[in-house]
Every structure is written in structure tokens, then in C-alpha cells.
Image (cartoon, rainbow, N blue to C red; front, side, top):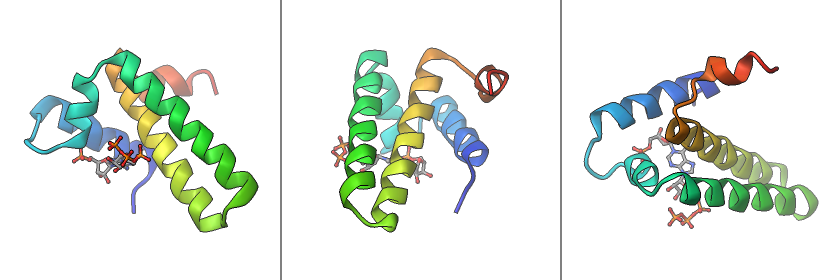
Length: 87
Ligand SMILES: N=c1c2ncn([C@@H]3O[C@H](COP(=O)(O)OP(=O)(O)OP(=O)(O)O)[C@@H](O)[C@H]3O)c2ncn1[C@@H]1O[C@H](COP(=O)(O)O)[C@@H](O)[C@H]1O
């Protein structure tokens, strides 16, 4: 289990070290357009899960949305501080 900040630190490390087989590296290489589409896709899945699926499925979809948002943040070079200062 990890927090939002811990996942972001892990993805930042993946981006720097580019280990073979990393889905994050592939997602970063795909570019901001593809990253944004994934955010939209996961957001839709969150909406559907919220209306029709179990709490467990909803939580899983939300975790995937958070991951896709983090990939987009890294793709655009944003840090967590860039986002948190708006909260
Ligand atoms: N939290 C996640 C995470 N959430 C979602 N995903 C990716 O998103 C996919 C699920 O999204 P989709 O519903 O679009 O499923 P899909 O259509 O089968 O996926 P694609 O074929 O389109 O990639 C998963 O199969 C993963 O590829 C994640 N991939 C990685 N992480 C975490 O990110 C970290 C680094 O991962 P790697 O870069 O792969 O090492 C690890 O801690 C992982 O746990």
C-alpha cells in the first residue's frame, strides 16, 4: 500500500531511471495527448463504478485515475507542490 506522495516519488524515479518493462516509462513516452486520454478514460470508469459497482471496484478505479493523473503531471513536468498550492 502507498500514499499519493509515495506513488509520485516512485513514478519520478521510474522517469529518471527508465527501467525496462515499466508501464510508466511507456506511458510517459506516449506523450501528453495519450496521457490525457487515459485520464479521461479512467475518469469515465470511476463515474460508472460509482453508479453501478461495488465500493471495492470504485476504490480500484479511483486508484487508477490517481495513477493516470500522476503520469500526466510528470509528462508536463509538474510537481506535487505545483498542485497542492491550489488546494
Ligand atoms: N498504480 C499503478 C497503476 N494504476 C493503473 N496502472 C496501469 O493502468 C492499467 C489499467 O488501466 P486500463 O483500465 O486502461 O487497463 P488496460 O486497458 O488493460 O491498460 P493498457 O493496456 O491501456 O495499458 C494497468 O494495467 C496498468 O498498466 C498502473 N500502473 C502502475 N501503477 C503503479 O505504478 C508504479 C510503477 O509501475 P511501473 O512503471 O509499471 O513499474 C507501481 O507501483 C505500480 O503499482
